[in-house]
Amino acid sequence: MVNEVGEMDSVSPDDHNNSGISVFEIDSPDYKLNFLSWILDITQEEADKGFEFLKRNNKSIEVLWDLLENLKVFTVVVEDHYVDRVYRDSYYFYYSGKHFSYTRFCKRLSIFDGKLEKNFFDYCSEELQQKFVGTIVIRPIPERSIGRTLLSPKYFLPIDKNGYVRLAKYVVTVFGKQLEVWAFPYGMQDGETTSCAEVTILNLLDYYSQSYPEYHYLLPSEISHLVEKSSFERRMPTTGLSYELISKVFCEAGFYPRLYSAKKMPKNKFRHILSYYIESGIPVAIGLKIAEENKHSIICIGHMQPEKIQLGQILNCANNSESDNVVWVSDTADLVDTYCFMDDNKRPYNISECVEVAKLNTSILSLDGFEVEYMMVPLYKRMILEAADAYDICMSVIASPKFGIKSFSQEWDSETKKQLLGSIDHELGTKEEPLVIRLFMASSRTFRKKRDTQFNVDNKEIQDYYNMTVFPKFVWVCEISSKALYENQQVLGEIIIDATSSPDAKMDSIIIVNYPYALCRRMPEDFLKASEACFEEVKEWKPYDIFRGNLTDCQSL
Image (cartoon, rainbow, N blue to C red; front, side, top):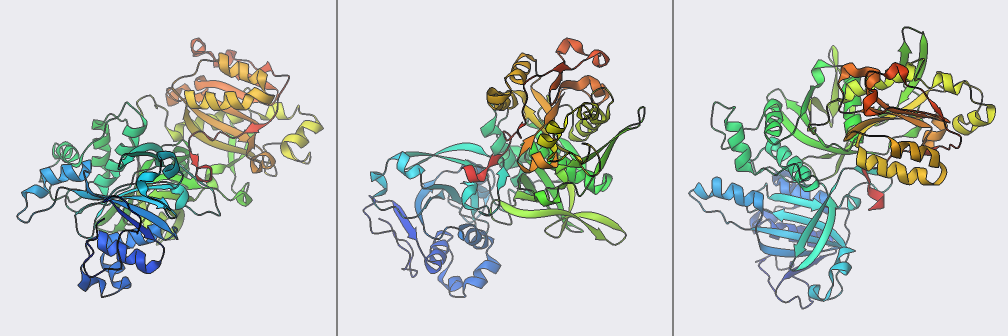
């Protein structure tokens, strides 16, 4: 067993016979601080100045302390000679050229919840998997030591409120034990080869390359070479990247990104677009203004459970100018203001509110007190229809005399109204009983699989219609509900439109309009024939659950 703590002799591997590997059982704040001081190579002189001094002057200590606060007792297995691909790339193209030497190797911490009661090697992978929290790479770089980190969010998100985040499955091998973790990658900028901008690119590409075979990972040297093509000065040491350059890098990596500026659109619209993409399971980059000459970049990967008590308090109007048809709508995007972020200045899975606040003679979107300036959405090439256009088309369908739900809801009997609305006092689409909508994009494969399972019990007729309809690779879905149904996480129908269509297609982008006891569907050969589309009667119908295939409910992990 190894103990290289020096004077901090309170930190030592546990007493089990672990055959030469370093295993630490952390069960107190003092021991945790001593362990972090040791693993981060903090000198005895610095340690003697106390915890508050270390937190103020060492970002790695601050982040790791906050991160591990939720784990009261945990076990850490340390690998001393770990090869991290990001740091090794930075080492060879930058750090190896310095006068004073840097080591090529990193340390990797594998964290397990609770204590390991026996020798690490006596556990099988299945037993360790039940306790596995994730891994943290420690780079040999002062103060900005945290490298690629893969941690399960269930240990770090609030337990009193559901969190829905986008994750990827990672397989790691710890001394021959193969383990899995569902995580979103996190890493800290080193200040020389990577800034927050490069870290944003690295972590997003890490996620996308792990999840989809169409994308490949880029290393810091490759990002630097791509940026040099559009730059007029040296790139090392890094001075950061503008959001235009970040978007350019994603273009070079095979994406079709969309860049939004909060200054060029109403703040409420910007918030809605953010919500639609996050609900679609698309992690997005967010650009913040810290000061006039100081910018920051983070990643938004999910949101917390919205407060249902606010349902119906903010209303939008869908209207049809030709028929004077008016439908009042409550958008669930107005309920979501608390998001989950990967911010390299804070611990992974940081929770923050994105709200509109007044500033001088205008208003800004504020995130932790900083102004939101940009949002970069890395879209796949077949995601042609963007969020704002999808919303406009769905609102046009809702208000349409032909496709809108109002003409159908007026035909419902009292029993149906009570089942769907909770009462018979008001018509659906009025201010008293607004239509609740939830907009998101999904791959047709995932969407149809989820709906096929849901429809298999009570909606066999609708199941057949969906299975017989041809879908494109991606669809925009506008779920429709009432306040009573949405509180039970159910919907009364949905509008499905083609995500590969253009904004000008309008009604011709409709694939399915599914209402209680009525369904309209269109095939690829029906393009430019929306006026000829008709509804078919559905005899057996029941409300069904909202779609949850894009984001992972962290309480289910």
